[in-house]
Image (cartoon, rainbow, N blue to C red):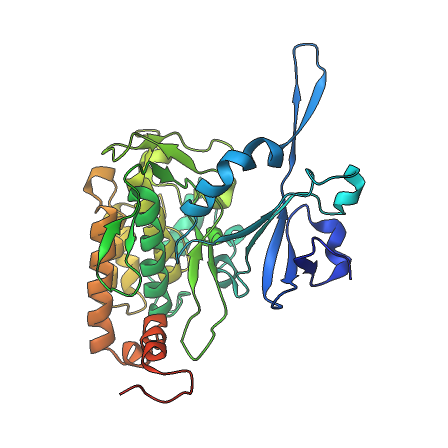
Amino acid sequence: MTLIHPRYVPRDPSEAQHIASSVQVIRTSDNASFLASKIPNVVTKDAKKQTTTTRLASAILPTASVPVSLILNHANIISLVDIIQTSNLPGPTSEAGLFGDITIWEDMDAGSLAYLLPTPESHPDFTDEKGWHLLAAQNFHRFSLPESLCWHVLRSISRALLWLHHGVKETEGIRGEWLRHDNDWHTILIRDLGPSQIWFKKQKGGETYGECKLGGFQWAKVCGGVGGVVASTQRKEDASREKMFYWPPEIYRHTHSWTRASEIWALGATVYTMMTGMPPPRFYNYEWQISRMTDKGFSKPLRDIVAEMLRPHPNDRMQTLVLVNRADDAWEGWRATTEEGAHLVDLVDKAVLRSAIGTGGGLIL
């Protein structure tokens, strides 16, 4: 089997030549599975059109590897596990192996939320008013995902946004204690929040859904000053069509910059798509958009939260911490009052159970 590095081998050696994207690897110490992605080289041209190739790993890793690892240290963000920099090893470059400099990431082995939804190609073009009229008409048989999964995504990704926007996360082992973990935190706007950026891990021990995490930071921007109230940046102009479905009104109408509120809307639009099978249709006003969430009998607490996230003006949307608390409180009520909620086994339930059971499997009394 071809070695990537003494610590890792490819799960399927035939994939070695395709690491331009990513490849599954196995850690030799414990056979745990991860994803490896190659760190590219950057080619630049000077005024005389002479090219210079710079190894990105050598240029940024000495100063950026630790901060990046700390930023991605969150239960609902895909974690950077390891960095393998072979280009600076002694000997010829060819001895660095087929893979060169790589990053090792969590393997989100249950796939992306995008795989569970209708394909973006099935949605009409933005200018196709007739197509959107047919799609957005009242339809009690429209596509939808289970409400329990909608809550799972909403709660998980809102926590990821709270961390990125404010450097605040829940203290491990103390439910409901939210603390800032870095006094020098600058807001991070991911600028690309939609189904293709939300990933799942397989269940490990009887829970209904595996871990749900946010990934894909190629468009992310660090904005504003430390603890700043205002954080904004420009939209990504060359975004693909499927990503534009999750642009909020202020972005596709060119009225405001991209802010924290834009990402609240994008998450709301993602959950809305899970509930209706379509992103919020632009041809219809706000009242008609949110009325489509009633077609499949979703609970009022979930509909109310998503409706507030989708308010047309960014100033009218709830703040990230308010969203996290609202979602947690409403989810607890939904679990206590619905049959679907009663049958849900959450990751928190499993964690509480594990803390009460000793290594021998008996309860600690």
